[in-house]
Length: 242
Image (cartoon, rainbow, N blue to C red):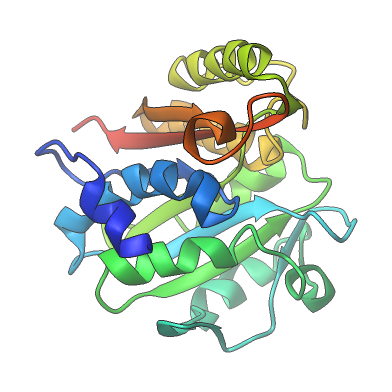
């Protein structure tokens, strides 16, 4: 299913982005939208060696960012090693904690892995869950791991939740316009469950000169569900200007 979504994604002939925002719902619902983002990594499949994965914590409450003590994450496509050196590098930051209780039941990062496994060669991940973290705390961690073209960033987030189709489209279009304009504004979970990682990425993109672009914006009413209560999904690329 993942590979068929990626094969169906239309990809322009352009450099692979430095960062993505991709949704994390069930593949039937958000898979086509996520694939439109991940297909953009394919031109650099042999160059990308490390992916910083950041998403919201849906099950555990904590301050700052939570890493995992695992050596690897496993999917039906095989093992994805964690970058222990990178994790050690940011472990000294006061906002970074180890919290396996947060990672254990969490889906927002794990659903991204088969997409990465399908478009990249060998790579490691740095999985981080955002709890009650400030923009500055997220920016500091991402900036510490920024590195060169071998490192990319993926923020995992769905958009609006459980509004009717027309209302969701309006809210999600406003969110997409804000992302493209690098506006961080007064965001909350009604706009995007991963609003904290998104805000951090937008601050960082502004400082690093990244150009954001919305490449897909749909909701579950477009893909596989009824239209009375929908969840919004957006795919965004952030490309270095040089």
